[in-house]
Image (cartoon, rainbow, N blue to C red; front, side):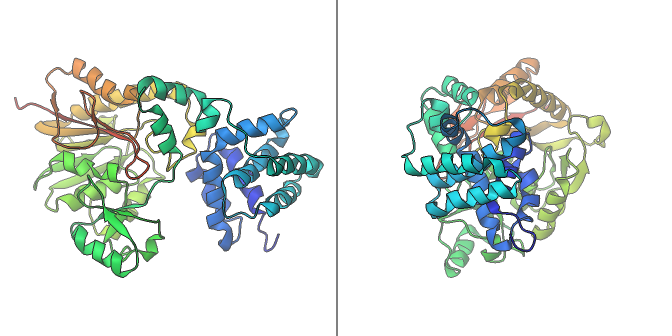
Length: 434
């Protein structure tokens, strides 16, 4: 170790342990990146994301290679071996002869010299052998069993495709700021910069890059020309039917991509109010607005507790992108496989229905509400809309004239596509005029 930096695999093992204990990668990775050299940061991120993506398959193999599980105080060494096993099985870049030696050194750096023999033996065996054929679907598809079973039940014809899409790396997709450039104009700028891209199929301002690039390579990024946003997430503005003079609410706004998309889509709105419960995440909304030179009214609040924040002036348009299981964006956030529990779904559905009822009460007659999730579970999607409409019989379900997604009878479901968009659900509801 030099300059106080730790071995990269030791740091990655610590991150994986934190995720297993309930922290997301976005929570624990930033501080971890500061514990390695600048030139190792991209590799650390790849190790952490890859080890989470393939955790269930790697864990099954490692379990077979261990005579007995490690004691709880030594659990970090289990994760160290998972990180090294990920490199042996999935990483083209790693020179595999170095992986084992460096894992042994990391074991010492983690203060577990008595386990170096175990680490060496297990990984030498894995290096020598072909990767075993996974015994069951959770290992084969590298997802928790409950998630595999639920997807098989909900999507009997599509479950394998969803699981396989979840294990791919998502493409980098941009939303061109329509106030600054047309999509074709920005495509030409990308071409001049040597960045290959194609227009998205469904989102009118979207461009998908052939290969991800750092944002500072994107022409005029710092000046607000484009934002990074998945194609499915961009579709919210096409459903809101925005028009000048409207008062618009983005009810669960952070990190602000949809708030900014709304403002870009219609530049003469009366006001856009963006609410989020998280004080930690609202600064991201501010940063995005500032970079894009846009203005919105930001409020930290629980959107469902309207008495805490609402000024009594009803909204013409509401975007309700509810907290959900995020099972449609696992390829971008593979730690969801370790963090999410089946027992989360019923409480989430309760929150979703509660938010929908609260937002309905502050929507103007004649107004439109777009309900959105990044989930693929019907329990959080069209079944919420069905439950709401039983309670609120005068609500009008609008069937958007679009070619994307599956018609569920109460909204449209996009399943994750390995070549384009994430998994998303949208439903459009209108409140009748008196």
